[in-house]
Structure formats: structure tokens, C-alpha cells
Length: 423
Ligand code: FAD
Image (tube, rainbow, N blue to C red; front, side, top):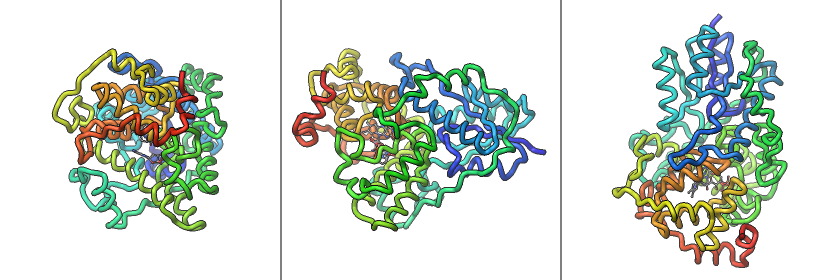
């Protein structure tokens, strides 16, 4: 009887899980393991890499996954240790040597897999976080178009469409191992403040796959997708854009699952410019995933694809971070980010541009602060967007400055946003 281990990474779901299904189809027993992120890891500036709101959201996704596994007769072993260490130890205890997981093409995640291989484990990786698989693209990832517009145009000309999402496995009895969670993992998952956390103080926004699926179904059953293009730049309130990114970030929802709902909505209500634009934005997400894979560790250096090393001004950075620059629109945005764990795309652009182009600050410090705060932090979307704005990424222009006065006039004409998030 062969046994394998499934290692959950940024795919905290049961639906649309080719990697998990491959493990279940190939092995009689599959040990399910989910390591928790380190609570105290710090960035180079001393900030928590995963702040309390993102951590709570992530733990909710893990707790939801464990419930879903149990409902199907299985067991998920949740551990409070670095992934490499936990996966190696559990494999030894269970006497197995084959690991299944999703493939993540960013340096830290590649290093984790390399460490497992260095311990003699066979790691079988599956790419399952993008809408389109690399082999569906009309070019090699190594020759990815340098700008998004060319990427999108060539993908659309080739008629590439996401594959249908796979259903969740119904029976997980073969995952029963009798192994217990780490006591500290169990304590972290049971923390009442974690369980009580609701993004936007809105009961729909809980981190589990089940909550994500319910929100997704509700979103596409209603009117919002029909006017997405006109409302997506709203800076106040929940309803302007889809707000699917927090579940996409943990993998509680797959992009293909979102896309399948979008296509069903279009089949029932008709496609329009707004529904097209949701696909368009999801393609940006894919683009940055492939872009990070294409450029590798270079994207994480100070220059990225640019020429000069950025300046670093600790005082300006602190004013930006604490929302005390004196620029009221930017300051409101920075307070929203720190207080709520979220920021609209428009405000992300405004505050990021201000740090880089008005304060002359280091784009990577800004990216690190976003990493700490954003509930929907996704390393490829974050790094890609920051580098783009700083003129060090996939941008035909040399960086994008957003004039905060003009932006405030256009997107907060009555000042409601600044009053809401003001001091
Ligand atoms: P919607 O407008 O409803 O878009 C639907 C989906 O399309 C999103 O959920 C997201 O998956 C994708 N998408 C939309 N815009 C982008 C974009 N510019 N780049 C990549 N994907 C996009 N997004 C993250 O998910 N995680 C991050 O860490 C992140 N950091 C960012 C940093 C900066 C400086 C900027 C300018 C943008 C960043 N974004 C990031 C992209 C974007 O702001 C968010 O995806 C979006 O605001 C999430 O809200 P939504 O789900 O309502 O998006």
C-alpha cells in the first residue's frame, strides 16, 4: 500500500485541486499536511511579515479546510513549524517519500521545494494557481511579452480559455492518519480573536473556502458584475469591485472557479464590457505570476528590471507608513490599509506612486509594508504592481506617477473617503 503526503501551500481548498486529486488517484493513503505561517517572521524593516489581520484570514482558511476534510471522513494535520521541517519529519514518521504540492515559481517557495529534495524526498509539483496553464499560452514563459497588453492580445488571439475547475473529492477516508495537530497549531486555530475576525466587519468575509464559495455564488447571482467596469474604481465601500482577492490569495478559491462562475453569469444574463473586464483583471493576475516565473529572483532585487538602486529615506517612509505625510488623500489611504487590511486598487496605486515618485522612497519597502498589512497579499501581484509603478517592471513607460490632488478630485470629489479615514 503506497502512501504519499499532500502539502497544502497557497491552495487552501478542496475544489479545483489537480495536485490533490493526482495524489489521491495514485496512492492508497495520502497524509494531508498544512503548515501554518510563522507568526513572528519580520521583514528587513522589522515589520511583521504577516500582520494580525492577514494572519487571522489565513488561519480561518486553514480551519475551514480542516472542517471540509473532516466532513469527508478525512484528517488534516496542521503543524506550527516551517514547512520544510514539518514535511520532512512527517514523511519520516509515516515512512513515505513522495510529496505532492502546488508549484509556486517565486524564490522562497522554490527554495522550500529544493530543501525537501535535498532531504531525498520526491516532490511532484502541479501548477494550479493561474487561470491559464503555462502550456496553454501561445509562447514559452521564457519569452513572455514584456508588457501586459501584448500578453493579453496574444492570449486572446490564440483563444486560450481556462480549463473547467475540478470538483472537490467526496471521500477522504484514505487521509486518516491518526496523527494529531501540533498543540500550538490547534491553539492558534482556536484563538477567539481569529474566529471573530471579519474583513470589512462584514459577516460574508470569513476566510474559509465555504465562505468564499458562498460569496462568489452571491456575487455572480446579483447585479454587480454587470456594472463592474464603472464601479471598480470606487474607493469607499465593499461593492465597487469583486473583493474576491482575499480568497484568491490563500487559494481558498481558484481563479478557474471564479472564471467558471463568470462564464455561467454571462450565459444566463449576457456578456457585457463589465463582465469582460473581470476576465481582463484576472489576466493581470496571471500575467504577474508568469512574469515572476520569467524573471525569477531579479524581481526581488532593489533594481528589479530597472537601472538605478532606489533611494531610501527612513523618515519619509515612516511618515508614509503612519499616514502622516500631510497629503490628505494618501494619508487616508495609509490609515485605511493599516486599520482594515485592505485598499482598493485605485488607492494602492495612489499611495504606492506617492512613496516612489513624490517621496523618492524605496519601492521594496512599500511592497514590504503591503505584505504586512494586506489581507489579500499575493507575492506576485504585489511585487509585479510595485515594480510596474516604480518603472522597474512590465511597463512601457518609465514608471507611473499618480497626481494625488487630481486623483482625489476625480475619485473623492465630495471628500467622503478622506473624512471616513481621516484623523
Ligand atoms: P477586482 O477589481 O474585482 O479584480 C478581480 C481580480 O482580478 C482581483 O481579485 C485580482 O485577483 C485580479 N486583479 C485585479 N487587478 C489586478 C492587478 N492590478 N494586478 C494583479 N491582479 C489584479 N492584488 C493582490 O491580490 N494581492 C496583492 O498583494 C496586491 N498588491 C498590489 C500592490 C499594488 C501597489 C497595486 C497597485 C495593486 C496590487 N494588487 C494586489 C492588485 C489589485 O489592487 C487587487 O487585486 C485588487 O484591488 C483586489 O480587489 P478586488 O478583488 O475587488 O479586485
